[in-house]
Length: 353
DNA sequence: CTCGATGATTCAAT
DNA sequence: ATTGAATCATCGAG
Figure 1: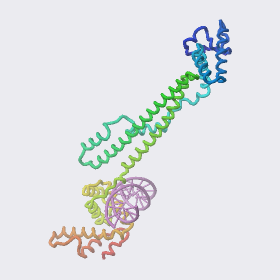
Figure 2: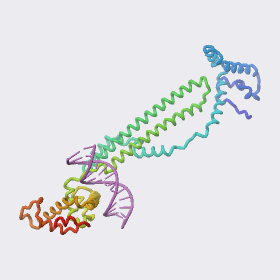
Figure 3: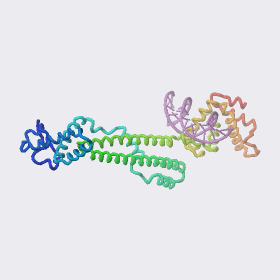
Figure 4: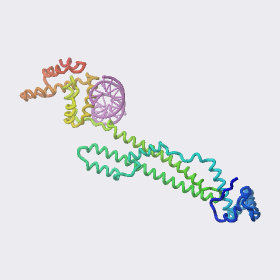
């Protein structure tokens, strides 16, 4: 029963002579000086409000207008607002101030890290391509790939931003629309500023959940783009014929121990214009595939064995006879194959002999 | 489009 | 760290 000053929003017309607009039960103690006439007024107004629905439309409209213009109207309206605010406030309250969504934070961080949501750097793909071109030279292929990646990324970025802007705009439009509507309605029903604020919050929350979806799908797109460009399997290129021949030559001439040393790998890498890692891959693949199906590689083995034999023969007796590499004589075969302890399986040797 | 060849990756064993 | 084995993803011929 503690009676605080009730009408915080001290609208004009209410401040005079206590609170003449208040209903009786809220009025006690505040001095009833010349209150009887006012009470009569209030009673009349309330009566009119209660009966307004019984009247015809035109009559009600006219009465409504009259009530709207009544000098007591602002005061009554404020009281209603206050009551409503109090009751509404007690209903909700706990649901405010949700913590920042960790999922949303993750998405934001990733978009920032990928350069999708952050400040545009270097003017996008054009600059990237220019930089790549400028660096030029040896890494031309690599930088071409890179600029392609950058171009696609900036495409995603652009879509993301336009969509985001669209949502933002739609959100603002909708918010102002609703606020106008509420302001309009506030002339005929009590709507507190807090209520408007709450409504705006609801709208923003809805729109931010849409934005979250946008962020999610943008992240997915970036992930796909990344995996496409980072997974080297996707940009596999066969080695050129010469490189393959060099590698095969080494492999078949070291068939007893086809494990090139680090130095040998470097040498081969240099000759083939590939990396040492690629040489290692190649030998790894070759060993396992050869072992798996020696029969299949027999022809190849013969060819390279013959070739190295011919080369060796040529080296020893410098071209005294014009021997064709494609048809070496059988003596050379035997010489080579007996030099090859080979793998576990000795099929190659038996065939040759 | 199919299918074998091939370079790269992954993972367990050493 | 290196290797073997399985697997993936693409190439390229038919």
